Structures are given as C-alpha cells and as structure tokens.
Amino acid sequence: MAILCQLPAGPVSALEWEFDDVTVRLDTTLSQGITVRASERDSATIGIANGGSAYSVNHDDGTLNYDDGRISQNVSRFTSELDIDGGALSAFFRVTGFYDWEQENSSRARTPLTDQALDIVGSEIELLDAYVTGNFNVGQAPAQLRFGNQVLSWGEGTFIPGGINVINPIDVAEFRTPGAELREALKPVPMLSGSVSLTESISLEAFYQLQWKEVEIDPPGTYFSTNDFVGAGGSRVFLGFGDFSDLGTSFGPLTPAINADLAGAAIPVPPFPAFDPTFLGVPRGPDDEGSDSGQFGLAMRFFSEQLQGTEFGLYYLKYNSRLPIISARTGTAAGVGLALASASAVANPTGFTAGAAGPATAAQIGGAIGTDRYAQTASYFIEYPEDIDLFGASFSTELGNSGWALQGEYSLKKDAPLQIDDVELLFAALTPLAALNPSFTDNQVGVFAPDTVIPGFIERDVSQIQATATKVFGPTLGANTGIFLFELGVNHVHGMPSQDTLRLNGAATDTSGNPDQALPLNPVSGAPGAHAGKAAEPSSAFPTPWSWGYRMAAQLTYDNVFASINLSPRIQWAHDVEGISPQPAGPFREGRKAISVGLKATYLQEWELDLAYTDFFGAGKYNLLNDRDFFSAILKYSF
Picture 1 (cartoon, rainbow, N blue to C red):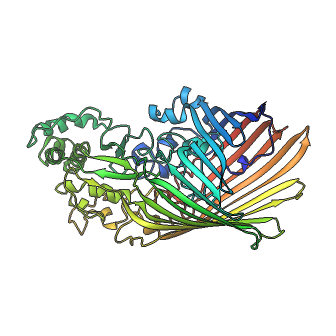
Picture 2 (picture 1 turned 120 degrees about the horizontal axis):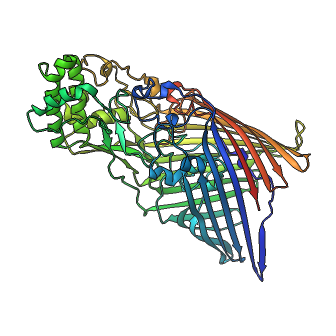
Picture 3 (picture 1 turned 90 degrees about the horizontal axis):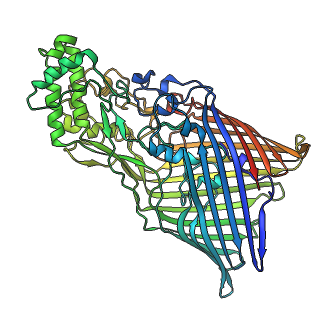
C-alpha cells in the first residue's frame, strides 16, 4: 500500500563531479519516520491462553506487543547512491542504514524481540547494489554486461506478487519501515546479467545468479508479524490449540501431585518443573536453505511498431524458492516412551493428580504432559525447495493517443511448492503417539515412524495472469497532473487436490478442516478428536484452485500551492475478491481489503513530508492484519 508515494516528483539536487570523461554523482536521502498503531487488538486473532479466542498462540506476538495509540516504529534512515559513469564502463553503489529508536530503546508490551529480530528491524547498515556495467558492440549489435550485486526486474507486474518478477527476493521487513523505498525493498543479489540488441526490434537478455537469498518476512513480535515461529528469531511452534501460553505453563498447586505420579511411572521420567517456559513447544531444527547454484534466466523482447509500439516479452527462469516452507521431523522412539509413561502415570484414575483434581482433569493434564515430552524430541524446520521452472510472457503498449498505457503478463511455475495445511502436518508428526490418541492417525498426510522427516509441501503447476492499466492526466480537478493505476490478477493451481484428499494451508486455519476431530469421540479413530470441543475450520477457510483480486491507486499533484510547495493527495485500495491462494506466496484471501490515504508535500524537490493512514479489514479472523491499522509520518531531505 505504498507504491504511489514512491513515485519521483522530479529531479533533486545532488553532488556531481567531472573528471575528464568520467562523471561522478552522489545522491543521498535522509529521513525520519514514525508509525503509530491506530486500532485496538482483535481478540479473534489472539490465542485463548493469551487472552483471546483463537485456537492458536502462534500468530499473536505482533498484535500483543504494541498498544493502540502507541508508536510502533521510529526510524532514522539514510540512503546514498554513488554513480560513476565512464561511458563504456560505469559503476554503481547503493548503501542504506537505519536505526529504529522504538525497537532498540523501548520495551515491548509482552514479548521481547530476539537478537535475530533486532538485527533486521532494530538497526543496520547494508551495502545494497554494487556492480560494474560495460557497454560494447558484438559486431554491429549493441550489448551490455553487468556484474555484481544488482536488481533485475522482469515482467509487467506492479502491485500483485507471484508473477514473473521473482529474481530478487523482497525484504518485507525492510519495506515496512517508514521512510523505506522500493529500491531498498528488493534485495540485490550477486549475478552476471547481460543484454544484446539483435535488431532494432529484437533483444535478448540473460542472467546467472551467484548466490541464493530468501524473502525476509516480518520477524516474530514486530508490529506487522503474523507468524511467531517462521521468521528470524522464531524458535518454537506451540501445540495445544490455544490452551497453553507460549510464555510458559505452570500447574501451580497440582505440581507436587503430578510429580508424585511421575515418580511412579513405568520407566524413569523427569519431574515436571514449577514453571515450564517451553511447555508444548516444538523446537526449530536447522533450516534447509536453497542452493547458490543452478539459478538463471533468459528473456527475449520484441518491439512492434505496427502494433502501436507494443513490446512483447518471453521469459524462462530456473530458480530455487525464496519463500519458506514448514516441514517436520517426528519425535524419537525415546520420546515416545517418555510420553506414554508420563501420560499413563499422571492420568491414572487412582493416582495423586486424580485425587487432587479429579480423573477427567488428570487425564487432560497427563495427555498434555505426555505430548510435551514427545514434542521436545521432535522438530520443525524451514526449507526452500529447489529447481522451479518458470515460463512467462508479457506485453506493454499505449492505447493510441488516449493517454492510457496497458501492461500484462502470464506466468507458469512448474512444480511450485505449496504448503500443506499446517494442522494436518502437525497430526502427521504426532502419529508416533497414536497409542496416546489414535485420532492423530486420522489425517491427510500419513502415519510415520519416529525420527522421520515429513515434507510440508506438494508440488503443482501454478499459473498467474495479471494486467495493469495506467492513465497519466493533465490538468484535472484543479490539479496540474494526476495518475491512476488499476491492476487485476488471477491465480490458478493446476491439479489442486480436493479438500477431502489434502487441504493446503491458508492463513489462521488454527484447527483441522475435519469435523470428526472436533467431536468428543472421533468415529474414525474411536477416540476423542484431536481438538475435541474446538470447532473445525469450514471448507471456505482453505485454499481453492482459482483466486483473484484487484488493486487501484490514484494521485493528484498540485504545483506551487504556496511558497514553492507541491501537494500530492493519494488513495490506494486492495481487494481480494474470490478464492484463496495457497501459501507460502498466495496473493489472494477472499474478502481481504485494505485502503490507504495520504498526502505528500514537496519543497524544491529536496524536502518531502508524507502523512498517511492505512486500514486493513475484511476476511474476519483469517485476515491477521485486520487490527494493524496505522498512521505514518515521514520527513525526507534529499541532496
């Protein structure tokens, strides 16, 4: 929701030097920006044990950490660009740095940010682009080679992700910071790229990437984070369907009785502590990162003068996924033994715990402790599947003298990884504990032995088509200039399994889509449902083969309103109309909406003040950002 405020207003002053045939230019932007939370917390997105009504404690750290009306970001930033132009040979460098006074110097309302999270959102100085470019001729054909850290954008997408433009991963956390610009959100990667003009109308482009980098999602506990265990600093995913806090568990006065029962277990088991900070938390294992090799692409562009100056593009890319997939490893055989012995001892209807709290409570506590003993020997991990083939086509044209420009693209990703519903993955990872609850085997993934890796994804072909219309206006509504953009996107998963066969993952589906798992007695297993008493998610909450939505943005610019100050009001709108795209990268969630209104003031193309308000809404509890509305204010100076 921040594209229009990135549009350049015109040239800015810069430092420039001439040395014979070499021109050196240095541009620097300084900014100070804040964001302020503008909505109260939505209890539907907060876990039961944390004071809400959600059946998960794994997506609420961000909303719990920032109070309504409080500053959520307070960022000082600089970005400098050095351009050395020697004609046939040139070089370009971009460095950025920021310091968030709020994250570095203030305490969070609930969960402290980890060191890994602060490395991303607290402060950083980073070299972004750093490349050299050579221009030369191959025979009579103009050609160019570029080597180093660079951003290479292919395709014609503007607002909607998931299309052709996958070469450079997005730093989502960076882009969220006030004052950040699009040029800082796309991560430059080391590559060799080149182009050659075969004729006046046909050109070829290619690249070979030398290093893999992942998409940087919001770290757990930061304001916009909606996942507490995948991003940097996430270390555990908590079981219990919202009943047990991710800050730890104590059974209080029942602890002595529990430990008396555990002392009489069939095998030696450790006692339960007075307070367990990681109770029912499955630890994170080592991530399986993508390979640095085997990533390249080819493109051909054709310019047709006969078709009103239309440019067509054809693309092929092979790349390793930049998006995280959650996979699992089942617990050990020893963990199964500890779990069964602990659960049996505490749940004993004639034991100390039953005598103190009653047999039903003892059975619940015993099951939870047994599951915890097993969970500590299991793990989840993040992986990035490799060798994705992408085929694409694009066009870009102007519609006569109407002032309208039209762009569009189609992309086909072969064998793209799609996340399996994380609850089904959880049940599969618990199947070694079937003796504790046979309902774990009533899942869509399978039954697994101890210490076994369970891939958390399937591979399917995914198509996406999107079209963008742009209109630049002259004087209108009293403004000197205006711009309007509209983008429509459609996503399709080929051969998606039916929900009866395998559900894919959608945001905030906290329980299973299997109604039997919500029953006191699962008719398939003959045992209590895995989340008995907690309603199953409806089929409408899970991904669908087709999904679509649109984005709109408009901005007017009023020149010299007073004292050489230009004013540019804007509005942006996003609406996911129908269907749900599967994670990890699905762009659409039916009913989700967002609106942003802003006003930018510029003075002499050097000073800029931007004020904005953004409201997220729609899609109910499945839109985990619907309580993260915010105000922002950004002051920039460029020289």
